[in-house]
Every structure is written in C-alpha cells, then in structure tokens.
Length: 117
Image 1 (cartoon, rainbow, N blue to C red):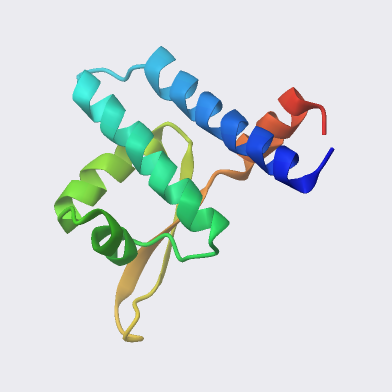
Image 2: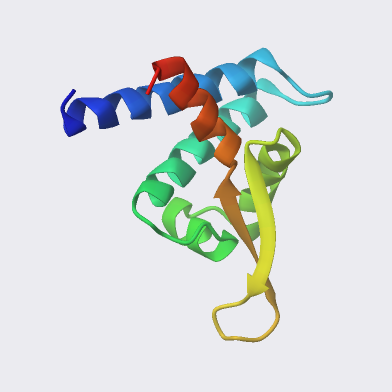
C-alpha cells in the first residue's frame, strides 16, 4: 500500500476511534458541547503530533485562540478518559513547570490492530 494511502487510513482510523470513544462513553455531568470540544481538541492535538510540535497549554492557546482555562477545561476530560497522558516539564523560560501532553500510545496500538498493520 502506498505511504499516502496508509497515512490516510491512519488519519481516518484515529478520527473514528476518538469520535466513538468520546460520543459512546459520556462522562457524568458532561454536556454534548463538551464532548464536541473534546473531539475538536483531539483533532488539533493529532495534527500537532503529526507535525512534531510540543503539546502544551501555551502552544494550544496560540493555535486555538482559547484561553488557558478554556484549553484546560477541554484537556482535563481527555486525560480522565485515558486519551491523553500528562507530564510536567520545565516551562519555556526554564523556570517553573508546564503541562505537556501526549496522545496515549495505546490509541495508536488499537488503531494498528484494527487496520491489521
């Protein structure tokens, strides 16, 4: 299979997996709007991941134009769902701590198992 087609299947697999995980498993006191924001945020995070960009609150506020609180409110349920992992790293100025995220590796393993590659 060509690399372009493989990439396209991977992108579709990721999108479908995230969509089903979020919509099929609503959390208590979660609104439909919150779930849609999470799906959108996962799309942004995936494209950042593909571009080898740091998945940080600061970078997400730059890209999405959301406030830091708005980003955190959308990210936190994704961490609780196990779709993202969180670590603390030094901030860009080398002082203090910054939250850095990673798409849970298990997602990519599950997608590969579905696609048989």
